[in-house]
Image (cartoon, rainbow over all chains, first blue to last red; front, side, top):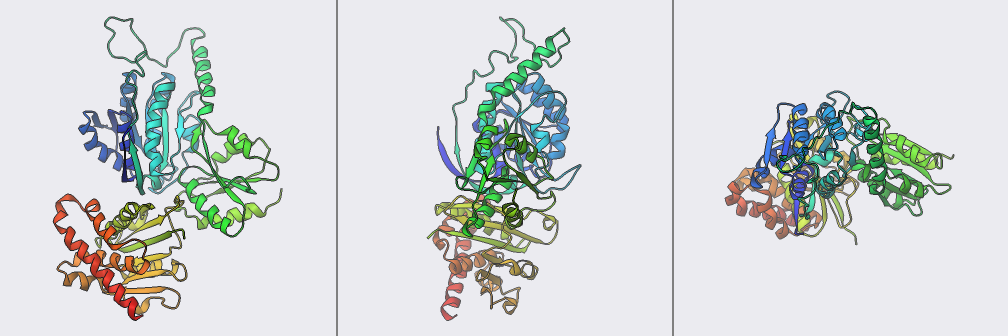
Length: 353
Length: 187
């Protein structure tokens, strides 16, 4: 492993992380606020001998990703919310066909065309399926440019280890901000996928990658297999915590809102308020056991999201009535900052069960 | 003593506020700090003003977006009206007095550092380096990062085909630093 420190936008970190992970195909279609990804990839991919394609649409890009993944080629596509909606059919097909496609969503405001600012309104779409049928993507929620880099490496690892699509869910803030990033190069297992990838059947039995199962019992068996896989992935879940040990109130927030909430909590700590922050790093699998372990008697929870209330449902399911979970939604369309979170946190602290 | 400092840098599009924001953050990284840089993300992109926020800290940085900054670099009048009221009490506000009457600075509440950035840059041969003059003044007023660390970071944020302008930019930073130093000595 070699490491060096660069000053990168989140979007740029995604590109360098993917290339370090051995990505050799990128397919995309322009949309703000993730255009730095295809722009940078168009020059960087050439340097490593890979393929860059500006597709005719997001539908095309996602299906090109499906094709590359079926060949066992490390590939990804990126877009922002409206474009990711267009990709959902192909993501469902990749899940059904057990294909390791990687998708990056630098989310923007919605619904519809929304705006080009940050939003977490795509949480449900990312973690609950998004397309049709019973499937899940492995979902990572980077909060720093370093995580944007590291999560791309993890995305390809998990996609190939588990044969599931992986979605990296950032937002307009992460895409546009710059931070120091320590770049590193993992060992890439070139044999990953050699048992199933399509590379020409000369000298071996033919292979078929598909999501259509018409034989009696076949689809039921396939669904059972996928559900078992999703349950088996639960130990991959991660929760980052700051200042929770003596906390009377734990804020649960993901992605950039998680770090902005940490600033608010830090301000309140200085005034003597016992506030901690728990940031789910994986959104699927959700860190259920880790959150449950925080639910000691008397402790309260406040979920803060830049949407109208999505992850809070999973927090409440995880805590299963063991603790009260309040919610503060910062509306997409308004740029979030720590000061906006202070009063909702104080309100949650003051409310008695 | 823990270091935490943030700055909003604001001006007209074309005054180079994004460039000095990048430069400051890069130099902060080189000085061993955690840094964030974020350009404004809103309707201003399509209009006449531009701003960015830089945070420098020796601890992990939470929010890259700051509503009540500890300091500002104000390059034009609309930016003064927009951001001066948001600066925390006692904060440093570098004002480009070539374009903004420094008497508009809220000196009762803030530490106003006027610097005639356009004139000083023009006297050095290139008015476009007014941004560097202003950043130089900010460096002196805050003492956050050494001038030479910032000068040495210039090649990392200036495109290769403008490399010949790096010495002039370094000089403009120094002139701004000296101007603020002289102003603070007499204050």
